[in-house]
Structures are given as structure tokens and as C-alpha cells.
Length: 161
Image 1 (cartoon, rainbow, N blue to C red):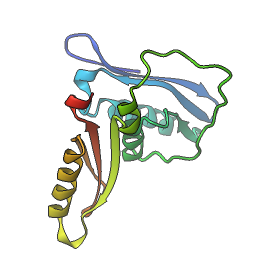
Image 2: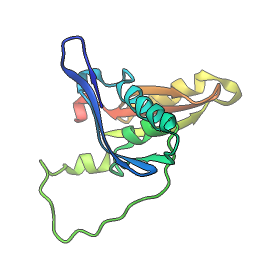
Image 3: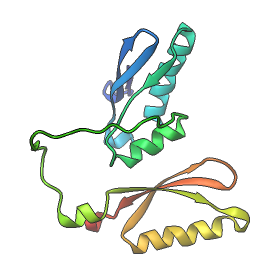
């Protein structure tokens, strides 16, 4: 399943396996220039609607890396639930790109922070955003869960990347 732009290029894609009453998303990707434009959500909703229309699909499952907090926040905003954590036992190290620096290991690229504004309102949220900015994070996305509950997604600042 793919979202194709007016220029004919893929903006995002979702690859999945049909397995009886459970479908499994094996890969989802949105091109960097199209992120935060609800491309992935639109693709997921199309898959979900296909499953609902078919009538016998029990679930649509996927997984992501434990450190991919942005994906986890997006999945939860789409109504998905975290049901289990997968463990692995490495028999040997994999070489994937460049090893992270000590600073990168101390400071993750993304932070996902639930925030409850309470009766005081958004004034407290702005103070919290300023606090994270002082730590080197930039606000990337705000997801409203209810009138007082929000999910804030921060990214490590460009000067620390």
C-alpha cells in the first residue's frame, strides 16, 4: 500500500502480510519531507478499513525498535495498544552504520512525554517545553489526547545531532 504524490513519487508506504485473521505490518515508511503530514496514519486507516470491511480480521499487528519513541507515539495516537515487549539474545554484534557517540547514548534523539495541563492550563506546558529546550530538545509535535492531556514529542536539537 503506498501514498503517491502528484509528482508520481511515493510519499509513504506500508507493507503487510495477510495471515488468516491477523494481519502483520512488516514495514512502514514515510519520506522525510512528508513526515508529520498524517501520511502514515492515512495508510494505516486504509488498511484498518480494509480489515473491517473483510469482517473476519481480529487484529493488525506491528513492532518497532524500543528506542523508536516517535513511532510508538504515532501508533498510540492511532489507537494501537502496546501488548508485549520482545526480547532478543545477540549471538554476535551487528554492524549497522556508525556506532552512537557517548553523548547520543546519554541523550536519545526523541523524547515522548505525556503531559497533563490540569486546571492551570497551557501555561505549565510552555514552562515544560522551555525546560526541555534548555536540555537541548526541540518540540517536534504535539498530540492532543483530551482537553487537558497531551503527548509532546521532542527531538534532540540540531547542534547536538
